[in-house]
Length: 90
Image (cartoon, rainbow, N blue to C red; front, side, top):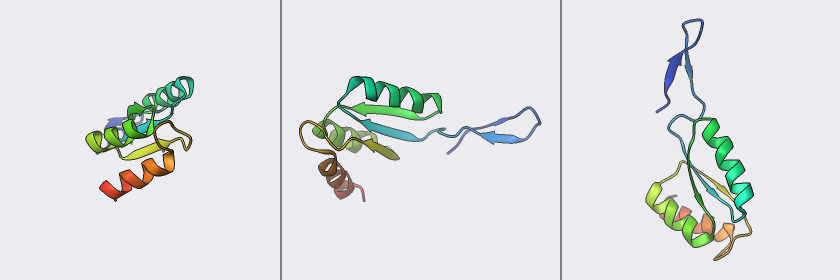
């Protein structure tokens, strides 16, 4: 569900990321902070994970709409994260 508010001309506009959940999976703190900050500024709800197992657990518990996923991760790689998340939630 997207939130709407009245613009200056009285027409309804939508906030791009309103109520959308994004899980950012990245092991570099500088990169994950930058991505998460930008997404939050656009109105998205953001959770982060720094390794493969944490990403799968967070995706299962939080049910994001989208994953922003690094391929090279500790634990297991991003491709394995993708496989496991898709197996649980196609």
